[in-house]
Amino acid sequence: MKRLLDVIGSFFGLLVVSPLLMSVMVIVWLQDFKTPLYIAPRAGRFGKEFRMIKLRSMVINADKSGVDSTSANDARITPIGHFIRKCKLDELTQLWNVLIGDMSLVGPRPNVRAETVLYTSAEKKILSVRPGITDFSSIVFSDEGEILENMKDPDLAYNQLIRPWKSRLGLIYIENQTVLLDLQLIFHTALGIASKKEALSWVVRKLKNLDVDKNVIAIAGRRIELYPFPPPGTDNIVAER
Image (tube, rainbow, N blue to C red):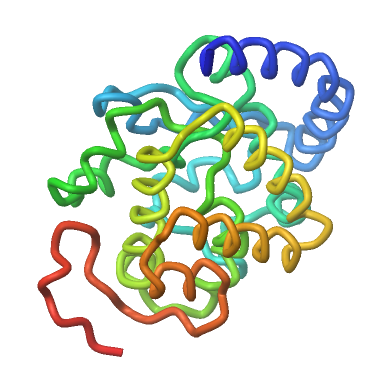
């Protein structure tokens, strides 16, 4: 049933957004006359690498800088790229990845292999399902670029402040996934673009209904400041706040 929803949703989604995507692609091309698409290698289901399609929001060869995480003030982002990232337009092209079976509409966000090799045994369960365009963490950390802004080491900050919670939210989704939950996540992801506050409120209510740990709920509601914490599977490690 989930795969059927993916195929139908991605097919009709591509039909609806194609005019918008074509227009943005032309604008991206006009800024430097380079390809408007970026093919991003990502770790998919069972860790198998696939080619995720994104609208290019950064300069050519930005991925060769050695930095995997991107902050809002990253010098590699192009002028139109800031708009693309803010409106999440670069995620729309991934509907093609969903259609061909690399991804799902809903599931843990795909990561680069350099990050997945750091996964604990508990986190590796994330690789047991198709990665998705959206999930709980897509709503909670939609401002990931702003979180990493002005960080001296964005990759280190990501692994300390974001990855531990993103992984937990991904595992929570896997343990509770249903078609209804998928539809709710798709709706509230779209709602989050207009009102992140409302989307976060729904996430908190949903996690409470699922009887999730109160620390995860507090972070998911963004009611407290993010702090370094060990990833799932290393909870016995004392984290410094």
